[in-house]
Amino acid sequence: MHKLSDYVKMAAETYFEETGNIELNALWIAEFFQDSGVQDAYPRQDLINFAEMVQKTLTKNDEQATKKTRFQLDKIIRAIKRPRKS
Image 1 (tube, rainbow, N blue to C red):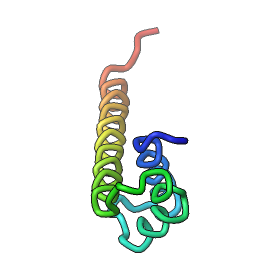
Image 2: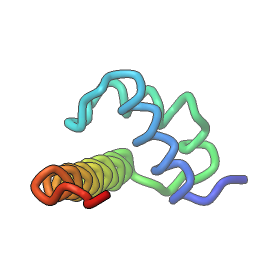
Image 3: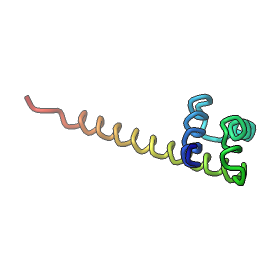
Image 4: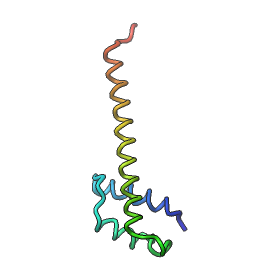
């Protein structure tokens, strides 16, 4: 059996891969909750709380990707401004 955090991560990754969005769709997460086995594995888990955890993960992943992109762009810009000496 998977940990609840594994289901959250799997849902966030799958949703982003399928839609490219970071705003979670209620119908999509309800279907995932039922079809992936979360409901069976964690019968006391509330769909709304699960959706909130997935949304939080989507937001966190987006923020990390944005930070990484900014860092890489800054690195490129600095390299362009300071040409290497031969």
